[in-house]
Image 1 (tube, rainbow, N blue to C red):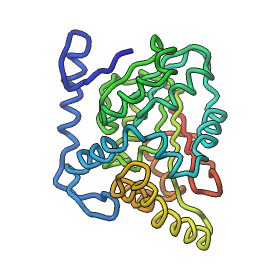
Image 2: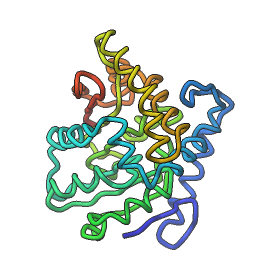
Image 3: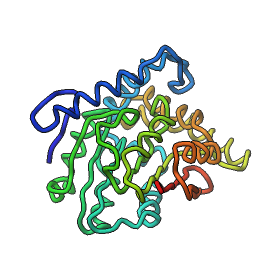
Image 4: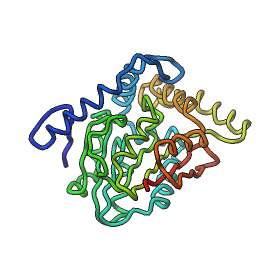
Length: 274
């Protein structure tokens, strides 16, 4: 198992490190974006998101249970069902955190390789502690990196996944563009993200739960109400299913479509690089 900090040069990653920093500098602007319901300079968002996930890293899996009432486990299995991993495929799991998707992918594929990339190193460290990481160490890489400036060559991976992470990216369209770049022709994109319910009354009931219950549970479980408050707000700011589908297509993906999970609490978006 390797945890590669790609902003540090070494013999195996020096050239990539240089490319990563060049790409990262190109993303820096003076524009503003959302951090939850707060408007912040774009250059500040990544650091603030890192702060959130540094805070919740040791409780990340519990956090997902809280955010989805445990249903995220079913959604991830549905994601694997639709993805249908094949032996020998190379996966890039962006915002992969503790490696949950990568572990499922490798188990389904039988054999292959997964690269777990996350902006927050403590998340990756937590992932390496899991039993699955030990048993699959020859099939895993752990990389610190930015979804908007992936430190990989063009046409490298067969599959790109991002689960509950793209809403935290400063410019999601750039992340989708990068996904298209690093996928090989015939490669598959799959995005699992919290989304919007199509029924107004159901959405209001869900919002009532989200804004009143989840931050309080975050305070009780992780002693961190503010991070959970941000996560709830970030869901409300994320584009709805059809708008995001348009972004997937704008990145160049074809045969793009989505499936609602639990009536739209979450959605799975899929696209192909053809």
